[in-house]
Image (cartoon, rainbow, N blue to C red; front, side):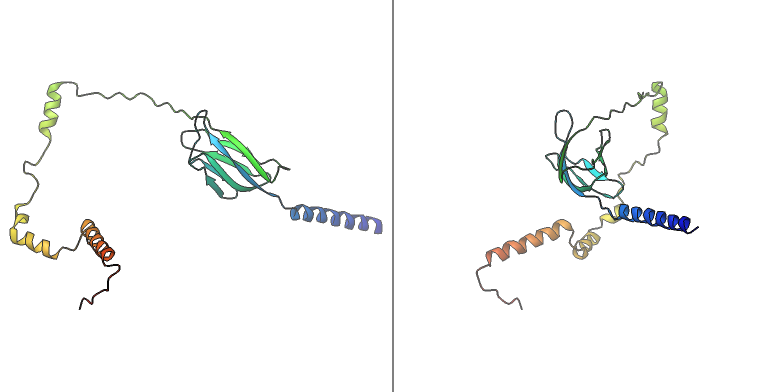
Length: 186
């Protein structure tokens, strides 16, 4: 009985020890870099990311990317108009890993759309005449009062263009007065 308990205790310690050493082993960090292109040109703005880790990057205007990954990470490379590519970082890879990814165009064919005109000219004329369009120009004549317009001009604050013009006038004046003493405006 003591041998059985001893054997059982040793096997439990062995299993727990192997599990903790497996958990304690950390995956190495690898600097993954590369270029993404189609068959002719480099592709800027392609998304390169690790979905499980929630981190990633985009390719530069030259199609280059660089990001830290772990051994065994699954990398997804995707762009609009191209099929999604997958890459798994191999275990035992060098600390600096460079890849070249060639994207394949994703061509989607749409069904043909046929635009039909009105079947006859008479049906078209009836549809146009049935429209209830106002005949005036849409301006209320009461809003064209000269006194009201003058009051609106006086009380309306500056819009974006007027504010920008005022700022630029102040800036150009300050550039002229840069080396002169500033006078007190009071």
